[in-house]
Length: 257
Image (tube, rainbow, N blue to C red; front, side):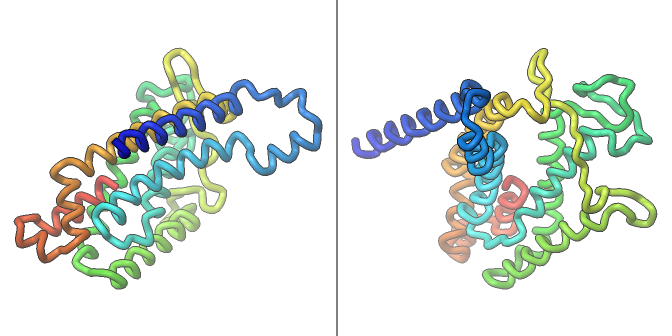
């Protein structure tokens, strides 16, 4: 009974917070505010910060699978986030202007570059990150504790340096260096294209994506794979004696997270 009451309270709290931020994004009277209040809100709670916080929520949910569920001390997790971000830059912009490839993109077909639909890029980015998770996890997950942390920390430092200096890799521009890839295609939702300044609509998308990730995370935790992760976190030896394949289960945490 207490757990049901607590769950209702948490649900009501989340709905109230979401409603407040929806009003803040869509209905807040920005134009009628005094200059001082306007500057204060733009400095301490700009609409972009609300959306970015939801992005960090999604990132934390992935990290929770690796560290929280499987108990793997990964200090370089953000490197996978960077790889996924650059996937969006490569497949949703004019960065590779020499190529003219369109796949249900949200820009004119005459635009140079690679333009894949945003929802397709989410899948591509996830698959690329899963591949790198397996690639890095394969040789390193035999390590434990501090040794694993040091190796993953090194990976987390190497990947940003690769992108920062990736504007001239044997004459090939991989990342545009410190300038980055800044102009991305709009997000198509039905007949509407959501641009960089449509903060309210982006808020709705990020809320839905975060809610979906929470649902998937909880379902994974209650499933067979999630129970295997928890068993490894508690006691690897006992888990292996019960038939849990340690290496494959750890790699799955890296790939899924």
